[in-house]
Image (cartoon, rainbow, N blue to C red; front, side, top):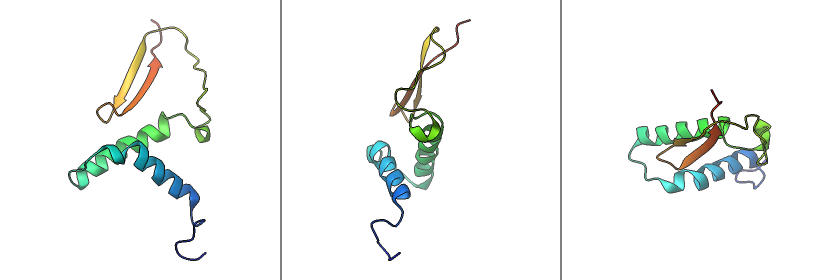
Length: 89
């Protein structure tokens, strides 16, 4: 494929766009270490928690636990939040 072709790598371009919109546009990075920390946190959130069909967790995902305290897992100073139920004791 020719250089700068619009179909060169749509999956990578889509992921970079998601990363920019959901994370990087909301921060001012103060050095390479800060940027690496932000990227590490976002990638971990994206691959483990964020609902999307590639992880077999679509947005209308039904949780298996229906009783217990609702807990908020917050990352990157509250930019990324995930709510889940802690198992009832």
